[in-house]
Image (cartoon, rainbow, N blue to C red; front, side, top):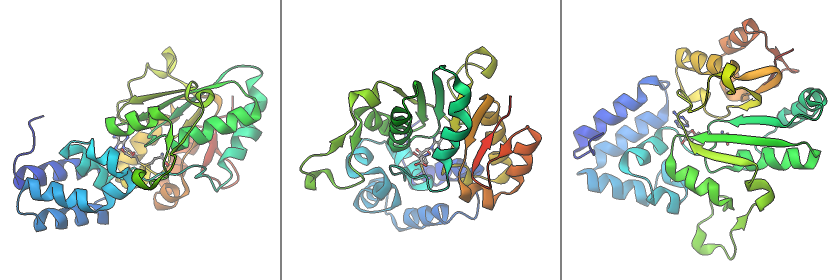
Length: 267
Ligand SMILES: C[S@@+](CC[C@H](N)C(=O)[O-])C[C@H]1O[C@@H](n2cnc3c(N)ncnc32)[C@H](O)[C@@H]1O
Protein backbone atom coordinates (compact mmCIF):
# COMPACT_ATOMS: atom_id res chain seq x y z
CA UNK A 1 0.00 0.00 0.00
CA UNK A 2 1.26 3.51 -0.89
CA UNK A 3 2.27 5.57 2.17
CA UNK A 4 -0.36 7.96 3.50
CA UNK A 5 0.78 11.39 2.33
CA UNK A 6 -2.07 13.73 3.12
CA UNK A 7 -4.73 14.04 5.77
CA UNK A 8 -7.25 13.08 3.05
CA UNK A 9 -5.32 9.78 2.61
CA UNK A 10 -5.40 9.30 6.39
CA UNK A 11 -9.15 9.93 6.60
CA UNK A 12 -9.72 7.49 3.77
CA UNK A 13 -7.53 4.85 5.45
CA UNK A 14 -9.34 5.23 8.78
CA UNK A 15 -12.74 5.09 7.06
CA UNK A 16 -11.76 1.85 5.30
CA UNK A 17 -10.27 0.33 8.46
CA UNK A 18 -13.37 1.23 10.45
CA UNK A 19 -15.77 -0.43 8.00
CA UNK A 20 -15.90 -3.67 9.96
CA UNK A 21 -15.92 -1.92 13.35
CA UNK A 22 -18.89 -0.95 15.50
CA UNK A 23 -19.86 2.47 14.05
CA UNK A 24 -20.79 3.64 17.57
CA UNK A 25 -17.18 3.18 18.77
CA UNK A 26 -15.94 6.38 20.36
CA UNK A 27 -12.42 5.35 19.39
CA UNK A 28 -13.32 6.02 15.74
CA UNK A 29 -14.93 9.40 16.53
CA UNK A 30 -11.98 10.45 18.70
CA UNK A 31 -9.46 9.50 16.03
CA UNK A 32 -11.34 11.60 13.45
CA UNK A 33 -11.36 14.50 15.94
CA UNK A 34 -7.59 14.21 16.30
CA UNK A 35 -7.18 14.18 12.52
CA UNK A 36 -9.31 17.34 12.27
CA UNK A 37 -6.97 19.11 14.72
CA UNK A 38 -3.84 18.23 12.74
CA UNK A 39 -2.27 20.64 10.23
CA UNK A 40 -0.71 17.85 8.17
CA UNK A 41 0.37 14.20 8.43
CA UNK A 42 3.59 15.09 10.31
CA UNK A 43 1.59 17.11 12.80
CA UNK A 44 -0.83 14.19 13.28
CA UNK A 45 2.09 11.80 13.95
CA UNK A 46 3.51 14.25 16.49
CA UNK A 47 0.13 14.50 18.20
CA UNK A 48 -0.23 10.71 18.32
CA UNK A 49 3.31 10.39 19.70
CA UNK A 50 2.67 13.02 22.37
CA UNK A 51 -0.44 11.43 23.76
CA UNK A 52 -3.41 9.30 22.90
CA UNK A 53 -4.98 5.94 23.42
CA UNK A 54 -2.82 4.07 20.92
CA UNK A 55 0.41 5.27 22.52
CA UNK A 56 -0.82 4.63 26.05
CA UNK A 57 -1.72 0.99 25.46
CA UNK A 58 1.15 0.24 23.10
CA UNK A 59 3.98 1.74 25.13
CA UNK A 60 6.30 4.48 23.80
CA UNK A 61 9.05 2.28 22.43
CA UNK A 62 6.77 -0.12 20.57
CA UNK A 63 4.55 2.73 19.30
CA UNK A 64 7.60 4.50 17.87
CA UNK A 65 8.43 1.35 15.88
CA UNK A 66 5.01 1.39 14.15
CA UNK A 67 4.36 3.02 10.79
CA UNK A 68 1.53 5.53 10.44
CA UNK A 69 -1.09 2.95 9.41
CA UNK A 70 -0.17 0.77 12.39
CA UNK A 71 -0.34 3.74 14.76
CA UNK A 72 -3.80 4.59 13.45
CA UNK A 73 -4.91 0.99 13.89
CA UNK A 74 -3.56 1.02 17.46
CA UNK A 75 -5.92 3.94 18.11
CA UNK A 76 -8.89 2.09 16.61
CA UNK A 77 -8.22 -1.30 18.23
CA UNK A 78 -5.87 -0.75 21.14
CA UNK A 79 -3.27 -3.27 22.33
CA UNK A 80 -4.64 -2.99 25.87
CA UNK A 81 -3.75 -6.15 27.76
CA UNK A 82 -2.44 -7.31 31.12
CA UNK A 83 -1.23 -10.39 32.92
CA UNK A 84 -3.84 -12.67 34.52
CA UNK A 85 -6.69 -10.74 32.90
CA UNK A 86 -9.07 -13.61 33.70
CA UNK A 87 -11.68 -12.90 36.30
CA UNK A 88 -14.61 -15.01 35.17
CA UNK A 89 -13.39 -18.53 35.89
CA UNK A 90 -11.84 -19.03 32.45
CA UNK A 91 -8.64 -20.64 33.75
CA UNK A 92 -10.62 -22.94 36.04
CA UNK A 93 -12.60 -24.07 32.97
CA UNK A 94 -9.36 -25.29 31.39
CA UNK A 95 -8.39 -27.21 34.52
CA UNK A 96 -11.82 -28.74 35.01
CA UNK A 97 -13.03 -29.48 31.48
CA UNK A 98 -9.98 -29.87 29.31
CA UNK A 99 -7.09 -31.22 31.36
CA UNK A 100 -8.83 -34.47 32.45
CA UNK A 101 -9.53 -35.31 28.79
CA UNK A 102 -5.99 -34.77 27.51
CA UNK A 103 -4.69 -38.12 28.77
CA UNK A 104 -1.05 -37.25 28.20
CA UNK A 105 -1.50 -35.45 24.87
CA UNK A 106 0.26 -32.11 24.41
CA UNK A 107 -2.36 -29.36 24.64
CA UNK A 108 -2.39 -27.08 21.59
CA UNK A 109 -3.47 -23.50 22.33
CA UNK A 110 -4.37 -20.73 19.87
CA UNK A 111 -4.38 -17.12 21.07
CA UNK A 112 -5.61 -14.39 18.74
CA UNK A 113 -5.01 -11.52 19.12
CA UNK A 114 -2.11 -11.61 21.58
CA UNK A 115 -0.97 -7.97 21.77
CA UNK A 116 2.39 -7.76 23.67
CA UNK A 117 2.08 -11.37 24.82
CA UNK A 118 0.76 -11.02 28.37
CA UNK A 119 -2.19 -13.35 27.72
CA UNK A 120 0.09 -16.04 26.27
CA UNK A 121 2.51 -15.66 29.22
CA UNK A 122 -0.44 -16.08 31.61
CA UNK A 123 -1.73 -19.22 29.90
CA UNK A 124 1.79 -20.65 29.75
CA UNK A 125 2.26 -20.11 33.49
CA UNK A 126 -1.10 -21.79 34.12
CA UNK A 127 -0.20 -24.92 32.12
CA UNK A 128 3.29 -25.06 33.68
CA UNK A 129 1.75 -24.88 37.16
CA UNK A 130 -0.65 -27.68 36.22
CA UNK A 131 2.32 -29.72 34.89
CA UNK A 132 0.48 -30.21 31.62
CA UNK A 133 2.46 -30.40 28.37
CA UNK A 134 1.43 -27.65 25.94
CA UNK A 135 2.36 -25.36 23.06
CA UNK A 136 0.89 -22.00 22.11
CA UNK A 137 0.43 -20.31 18.73
CA UNK A 138 -0.17 -16.60 19.31
CA UNK A 139 -1.01 -14.08 16.59
CA UNK A 140 -1.43 -10.34 16.34
CA UNK A 141 -1.75 -8.24 13.19
CA UNK A 142 0.74 -5.62 14.47
CA UNK A 143 4.37 -6.63 13.73
CA UNK A 144 5.79 -4.28 16.41
CA UNK A 145 3.70 -6.00 19.09
CA UNK A 146 4.87 -9.44 17.96
CA UNK A 147 8.51 -8.32 18.10
CA UNK A 148 7.92 -7.05 21.64
CA UNK A 149 6.11 -10.24 22.68
CA UNK A 150 9.03 -12.37 21.45
CA UNK A 151 11.31 -10.52 23.90
CA UNK A 152 9.21 -11.77 26.79
CA UNK A 153 9.51 -8.37 28.41
CA UNK A 154 7.09 -7.45 31.17
CA UNK A 155 6.92 -3.67 31.35
CA UNK A 156 3.27 -3.39 32.39
CA UNK A 157 3.09 -0.33 30.13
CA UNK A 158 5.40 1.54 32.50
CA UNK A 159 7.87 3.91 30.74
CA UNK A 160 11.08 1.92 30.26
CA UNK A 161 13.29 4.84 31.29
CA UNK A 162 11.86 4.68 34.81
CA UNK A 163 12.27 0.93 35.21
CA UNK A 164 15.34 -0.30 37.04
CA UNK A 165 14.86 -3.73 35.55
CA UNK A 166 12.06 -4.66 33.13
CA UNK A 167 10.89 -8.14 34.08
CA UNK A 168 11.35 -10.94 31.57
CA UNK A 169 9.56 -14.26 31.43
CA UNK A 170 11.84 -17.27 31.60
CA UNK A 171 13.02 -19.36 28.64
CA UNK A 172 10.76 -22.15 29.93
CA UNK A 173 7.80 -19.93 29.09
CA UNK A 174 9.07 -18.43 25.82
CA UNK A 175 10.07 -21.77 24.31
CA UNK A 176 6.43 -22.92 24.50
CA UNK A 177 5.05 -19.97 22.50
CA UNK A 178 5.24 -19.23 18.76
CA UNK A 179 4.47 -15.52 18.37
CA UNK A 180 3.60 -14.65 14.77
CA UNK A 181 2.11 -11.81 12.78
CA UNK A 182 -1.34 -12.83 11.58
CA UNK A 183 -4.73 -11.38 10.78
CA UNK A 184 -7.49 -12.92 12.92
CA UNK A 185 -9.69 -13.02 9.81
CA UNK A 186 -7.13 -14.84 7.67
CA UNK A 187 -4.96 -16.77 10.06
CA UNK A 188 -1.81 -18.18 8.48
CA UNK A 189 -2.67 -21.67 9.67
CA UNK A 190 -3.63 -24.88 7.90
CA UNK A 191 -7.32 -25.73 7.66
CA UNK A 192 -8.74 -27.21 10.90
CA UNK A 193 -8.88 -30.68 9.30
CA UNK A 194 -5.24 -30.43 8.20
CA UNK A 195 -3.58 -29.68 11.54
CA UNK A 196 -5.06 -26.24 12.23
CA UNK A 197 -7.23 -27.25 15.19
CA UNK A 198 -6.59 -26.66 18.90
CA UNK A 199 -7.58 -27.86 22.35
CA UNK A 200 -7.98 -24.27 23.56
CA UNK A 201 -8.78 -21.19 21.48
CA UNK A 202 -8.73 -17.73 23.06
CA UNK A 203 -10.11 -14.62 21.39
CA UNK A 204 -10.54 -12.03 24.09
CA UNK A 205 -11.16 -8.30 24.25
CA UNK A 206 -11.34 -8.09 20.45
CA UNK A 207 -14.72 -9.28 19.17
CA UNK A 208 -16.58 -6.42 20.86
CA UNK A 209 -14.88 -3.91 18.54
CA UNK A 210 -16.72 -5.23 15.48
CA UNK A 211 -20.21 -5.14 13.98
CA UNK A 212 -22.37 -8.15 14.95
CA UNK A 213 -22.09 -9.65 11.43
CA UNK A 214 -18.30 -9.49 11.46
CA UNK A 215 -18.20 -10.83 15.03
CA UNK A 216 -20.42 -13.80 14.06
CA UNK A 217 -18.15 -14.72 11.17
CA UNK A 218 -15.04 -14.43 13.33
CA UNK A 219 -16.46 -16.55 16.16
CA UNK A 220 -17.74 -19.18 13.71
CA UNK A 221 -14.30 -19.43 12.12
CA UNK A 222 -12.56 -19.76 15.48
CA UNK A 223 -15.10 -22.29 16.77
CA UNK A 224 -14.25 -24.46 13.76
CA UNK A 225 -10.66 -24.58 15.06
CA UNK A 226 -11.65 -26.04 18.46
CA UNK A 227 -11.12 -29.80 18.64
CA UNK A 228 -13.89 -32.02 20.01
CA UNK A 229 -13.49 -31.89 23.81
CA UNK A 230 -11.79 -28.49 23.53
CA UNK A 231 -12.57 -25.05 24.89
CA UNK A 232 -13.19 -21.62 23.39
CA UNK A 233 -12.54 -18.63 25.65
CA UNK A 234 -14.15 -15.32 24.71
CA UNK A 235 -14.88 -12.30 26.93
CA UNK A 236 -17.94 -11.22 28.86
CA UNK A 237 -18.05 -7.78 27.23
CA UNK A 238 -18.48 -9.17 23.70
CA UNK A 239 -21.10 -11.70 24.83
CA UNK A 240 -23.20 -9.14 26.68
CA UNK A 241 -22.94 -6.72 23.76
CA UNK A 242 -23.84 -9.39 21.19
CA UNK A 243 -25.97 -12.09 22.88
CA UNK A 244 -26.68 -13.64 19.46
CA UNK A 245 -23.15 -15.08 19.63
CA UNK A 246 -24.48 -17.48 22.29
CA UNK A 247 -27.08 -18.81 19.86
CA UNK A 248 -24.47 -19.17 17.14
CA UNK A 249 -22.19 -21.12 19.47
CA UNK A 250 -25.07 -23.27 20.71
CA UNK A 251 -25.98 -24.11 17.13
CA UNK A 252 -22.35 -25.19 16.60
CA UNK A 253 -22.68 -27.62 19.52
CA UNK A 254 -20.83 -25.56 22.13
CA UNK A 255 -21.90 -25.67 25.76
CA UNK A 256 -21.46 -22.50 27.80
CA UNK A 257 -19.78 -23.21 31.13
CA UNK A 258 -21.77 -21.80 34.04
CA UNK A 259 -22.54 -18.45 32.40
CA UNK A 260 -18.83 -17.84 31.88
CA UNK A 261 -17.33 -16.59 28.62
CA UNK A 262 -16.06 -20.16 28.20
CA UNK A 263 -17.47 -22.81 25.84
CA UNK A 264 -16.87 -26.53 25.78
CA UNK A 265 -17.21 -28.52 22.58
CA UNK A 266 -18.21 -32.01 23.73
CA UNK A 267 -16.66 -35.01 21.96
C1 LIG B 1 -7.41 -5.20 23.29
S1 LIG B 1 -6.08 -6.14 22.56
C2 LIG B 1 -6.50 -7.74 23.16
C3 LIG B 1 -5.27 -8.50 23.58
C4 LIG B 1 -5.52 -9.78 24.38
N1 LIG B 1 -6.37 -10.71 23.67
C5 LIG B 1 -6.10 -9.48 25.74
O1 LIG B 1 -7.29 -9.67 25.92
O2 LIG B 1 -5.35 -9.05 26.64
C6 LIG B 1 -6.60 -6.13 20.84
C7 LIG B 1 -5.48 -6.53 19.87
O3 LIG B 1 -6.06 -6.80 18.59
C8 LIG B 1 -5.04 -6.61 17.61
N2 LIG B 1 -5.66 -6.61 16.28
C9 LIG B 1 -6.36 -5.62 15.67
N3 LIG B 1 -6.84 -6.04 14.49
C10 LIG B 1 -6.42 -7.33 14.33
C11 LIG B 1 -6.60 -8.32 13.33
N4 LIG B 1 -7.32 -8.10 12.23
N5 LIG B 1 -6.04 -9.53 13.52
C12 LIG B 1 -5.29 -9.80 14.63
N6 LIG B 1 -5.08 -8.89 15.60
C13 LIG B 1 -5.66 -7.69 15.48
C14 LIG B 1 -4.45 -5.31 18.07
O4 LIG B 1 -3.18 -5.10 17.51
C15 LIG B 1 -4.43 -5.48 19.60
O5 LIG B 1 -3.19 -5.97 20.03
